[in-house]
Amino acid sequence: MDVYEAVTSRRAVRGFTDRPVPKEVLERVLSAAAWSPSGSNLQPWNIYVVTGAPLAELKKRAGERVTAGDPWDEREYEMYPPQLKSPYRERRSAFGHERYSALGVAREDWEARQRAASANWNCFGASAALFCYIDRDLGRPQWADVGMYLQTVMLLLRDEGLHSCAQMAWSVYRKTVADILSPPDELILFCGMSIGYEDVTVRYTRTGRAPLDETVKFVQG
Ligand SMILES: Cc1cc2nc3c(=O)[nH]c(=O)nc-3n(C[C@H](O)[C@H](O)[C@H](O)COP(=O)(O)O)c2cc1C
Image (cartoon, rainbow, N blue to C red; front, side):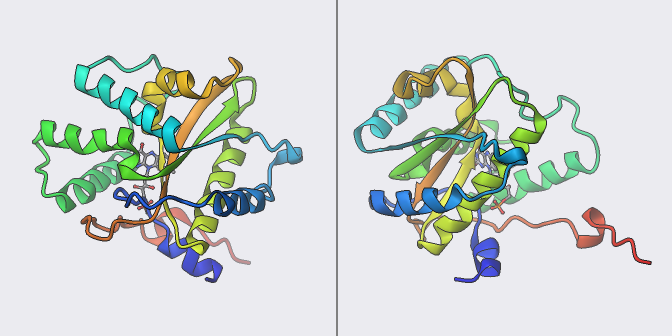
């Protein structure tokens, strides 16, 4: 698979089969992803890979919290600014429309949207997940480094015939994640990532992108 194909075939997959992901594949991917760039080579990513019984336990505990209507854990970072301005507001709204219309869920059907969202905490059925932490002392450039690392992981997964879905949703149940992983206190959970083999029977709409001239300016001499 060439890089263009890896980039364009990666998407947020939200339906996986229960086929296990071999540990050696995950090791190969994460060993290669370690070559991702980072400012001054800090390599600020702290990754926990979870499969088998611990993942089943995590899904169970998170599911119990969803069912109980347990309040979310207090935030350690804001996922989005409270007042999302244009053009981001419109892009988020278009994404919501694409995501929920593929599931046949109406925009105003809040309960059905919540049900669909709760699949996050079952890792959309995936048999493997990773959790990405960053040291709370580090700043915005290091968070950007972590993003590059995660994209590298997702592209390498494509080369292995695997799919993924990055999930900030896990940050709202970060204490449950911590109960399973016992990370040191100095780490903040940025996101989880479901990893596995796609369930091709799950319907989806490919999310669109802004036209190139909306996000890129060529300044030519
Ligand atoms: C850091 C990050 C966090 C994300 N968190 C979630 C999440 O919690 N749940 C989810 O279903 N999708 C999540 N996504 C997936 C995005 O919604 C998705 O990447 C975006 O809509 C573009 O769609 P595509 O990846 O299918 O091209 C996340 C993506 C990123 C990069």
